[in-house]
Image (cartoon, rainbow, N blue to C red):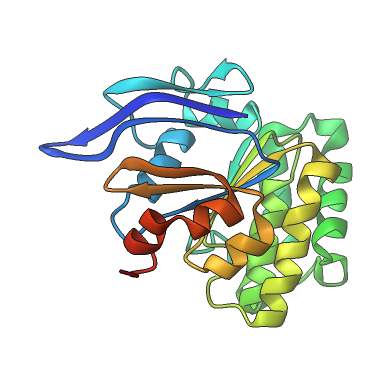
Length: 234
C-alpha cells in the first residue's frame, strides 16, 4: 500500500506536485494524466531522486522519504524507466545478476537470477549480449530486474511504449502475475488508456500536480472531469 499525505514538490515557483494526498491499495494500480501533470515527478519522489518540500510517503506503513535511493531498493522498491537501462556489453543473465549483487545474499543470487529469467521467459537467450536484444526483449530484461530479490513496490514508467499489440499483451500478462508470484504491488504510468484499463483495477489521475480522481479504473475513466482533462473531451 502506498500512502501519500499532503505532498508538495517545488522547483522555483513551480509546484509539479501540489498538496497531493492519496492511498493506493490495488495490487496493480495505474497513474495517468496529461503531459505536465506530475506523474514522473511523483515516481522520482517515490524513487528518492526528488525530495519534496512538504508531506510524507509510506510504503506498507514504512516511511520512504527518510531513506536513500539504495535503502529504498533494499527495502523492496524497484523501477523501470522509459528508456531501458540495459547494459549493452553484459549478457541478459549478467544484467540481472548486476542487480542481484546489491540486494540478494550471495548464496541466493544464482537462484534469484534464474527465477527472474524463467518469469520473463528469457532463459533461452540468457547468454545473449544486451546490444543484440530487440525492444521487447529489452523491456523484458527491465521487468526481470524489477522482480529480483524481494520486491514490495514496482514502478513501471510506460512499460509498453513502442511495443506491438501482441508484445504489449504479453507484457501485460506478466505484470498481472507479479502480485501473486512476488507479493509486490505494481504502479504503472502509461498514456495508453486501454492498457491501463486492462491492467489496473485502481487508477489515480493527476492534473497540474493535484489529485483529479482516484478509484476503480472504470469509474475513473468514465469521470467527466477526467475525460475533459486527459482525453480532451468537452
